[in-house]
Each structure stands twice: as C-alpha cells, then as structure tokens.
Amino acid sequence: MERATYLILAYMVIWVGIAAYLTWLSGRQRQTARRLEELTAQLKRREVQS
Amino acid sequence: MLKRFDPFAVLALVAIPGAVATVFFYAPLERTMGVVQKIFYFHLGLAAAAFLSFFVACVAGVLYLVQRQRVRDEQCAAAVEVGVLFTTLVLLTGSIWGRPIWNTWWTWDPRLTTSLILWFIFAGCLILRGAVEQEEKRAVFCAVMAIVGFVDVPVVFLSARRWRSIHPTVIRSEGIALEPAMIVTLAVSLFAMLILWAALFRLRCSIQRQENTLLDLQQQLQR
Image (cartoon, rainbow over all chains, first blue to last red):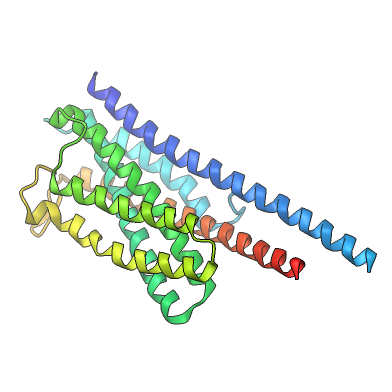
C-alpha cells in the first residue's frame, strides 16, 4: 500500500468512529425523548381517569 | 442533536476543519516518514483528550464517593465512555501508522501494551456499568474502577521514557522535538481534539441526565 493510503485510512477511522458514536448518541437521545412522550401521555391519561 | 448553542460544539465545528487544513496544507512533510507522519497530529491530540477524559472520570469518581451526588456519576460515566472511544481511535491510528513505519500492525512495545491495558480497564468499566442494575452499586463500582484505572495513565505516559521502547517520544524534558511549523500544527490539532472532547463530554452528560430523569419519572409512576 502507498503511504498516502495509510494516511487516508487513519483519518477515515477517526471521523467514521466519531460519526458512529454521534449517531449512536442520537439514537439514544431519540429513544429517551420517545419514552418521555409515552410517559407524559400516560400521566395525562391518569389525570383524566382520576 | 447537538445543543443548538453549545459553545464547545460550535467551536469544534470550526476548530476541526481548521486543524485538518493545518495538517494537510501548513505542516511540512517529514523527511523520513513522508505523508504518513501527518497521522501523528491527531493521534497525539486524541491521546491527550483520552488522558484528560480518564482524569475527569477519576476526579468525578472521587467526588462521587465523597458526596454521593448523582451528577458526579453522570460525569464519571460520560468521561469513561468518551475516553474509551478516544483510546480506541488512538490504538487504531497508531496501528495504521505502525504498519508502514515499523512494518507491523502491532508490537508488544511498553507504550502500546500499557495503552491496551488502559483500554481494557475502562472498557471493563463500561461493561460493568451495563451489567449492574442497582444504581448506587453501579456508580460505586464505576467510581472505584475509574480511580484505579487512572493509575495506568502516568504509566502509559512514562512507558516510552522509562522502558526500552520503539515508540517515538516527541515531548521530552529538553523540549518538543519538532520544527516550529510542526509544533504549531500539533498545537492546533491538540486544541481541536480537546474542544471536540469537551463537546462530546457535555453532550453525553446531558443525555445521561435525561435518562436518569426518565428513570425517576418511571419509578414515580409505578408507585
């Protein structure tokens, strides 16, 4: 492999790694927001019932 | 996803392209290693940010054990996670640099071995966090592991100086063994990586806080 290929590979690993982590965090945050919405709806239903 | 006005996230969006441009368009070409030496600027930046992360995890761990505040556990967990990510990237980029320079992807050099041990300690801490369900127990385990694991950080730093190592040492007691343009590039990439670390750490802390709030709400509803 050419030396430039290693350089490109290293920079790809860094930015793909960070992008993957950000994507995973984004998924976690979306899941938390969804659960929060469900919980709020559940609370509202309880209030109506009581 | 990133907080709209998080100053560190905004700064990272400016600093990282700036650092990449400095590495590729300003830094001179190293005579013996050639272009592959340019990996070093971000490799060292990532390593510094990983060390900072584990230091923060250690301090947050100590504070949790003293104060028993949930916020300290959130900080400890966030620092460990971002630190493991950065250490993974350090090991990978180092391995990619080593292949054309040392003619091998991996060697059991003191610096590489102690770095791998550091990765295993903190990755173990993350696995432990996922395995323990009881919140307080999990926080105590994580705090203790972060404190004990941090002992390896100075060992990693000094390994290439104290033991026979083939890993290059740039920062020496006599000064930085680089030419001025390379020092500027190193400083810029170091700054960018530390800003990125701060942005990721703050983001991870806020998500952890949201998850804990959600957990509290769920427990209140179940009562």
